[in-house]
Image (cartoon, rainbow, N blue to C red; front, side, top):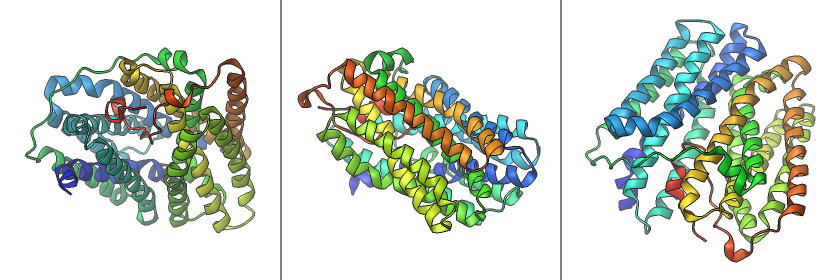
Length: 406
């Protein structure tokens, strides 16, 4: 209980950030469709978010060192709030893309600061519990952000104003806390090649995870519109995806610790490709079938990043773990920047099934590459494995918080 109270301000900021900034993506997709944006233009909005996310991950540690945690957090939250409020002032997809860059910067920057603060406050004795609560809070906030869409009217100043108020409210718990800000550590070096050098399969896995997650989150509402879902049903559709991913963490973690992680990763991708096929077929089965397919899709795709990260860390030294986590996040962002535009264009060209054909093919490629890698290098023994950990895709500093142990 003392642990929860001591981190209450941080966790409340996480919830408010997720509700405010996390709700922008589905609202933008619905608003763009309402305003007559093309599918490609809606996809650009999702890609712009992840471009801003990468900029924020790189910039936040440096800004913390210059102005301190609280001021940096206030600056990033203000950037996100401005990006949200400006939507209804300029109705143009490319102007909105710039605003989404601002929201992506805000997400990465605020999470970087929160995780740096957590890192400074936890001890080895409290780390596991603190991270457990952090993951639950993050998932619940994400779930709430998807459900918000059910009550937000597309292309409405009131809807964007509400999200901006939530984003702005995230300032209060952290900025007004009496807890002293932690000392600023050195920013991790960004060495994307490190991930490939330690495990090519893990590197490919996080890229495919970025492709899958970004397309579903950013373009999912467009898919929902194309299959005839109403706004409240699209909210449940996205929530089912997040909930399925949350449920998967415990069983997939057990499997990844007990069996060869490459085998687990390959079968997850096989199941993900199957989930793509079921998602295409579900459009003939009604709303409930679509929701069930979304939950199964989240169940099979969410753990891929964490399993890939665990496999990469099996081949890393203790002094490489922070930089390896940053490299994996970079590769995730690469996949996430590219996929929303591609998925949206495919929906516009080939209809609702286009996105899932693209995602399914991505997982088929990962399966083939995984089988090839299994023939090229033996799996590390059980005594050399790190413990599986659910890894939030939040900032380059997440590796410091996780501190994997064998």
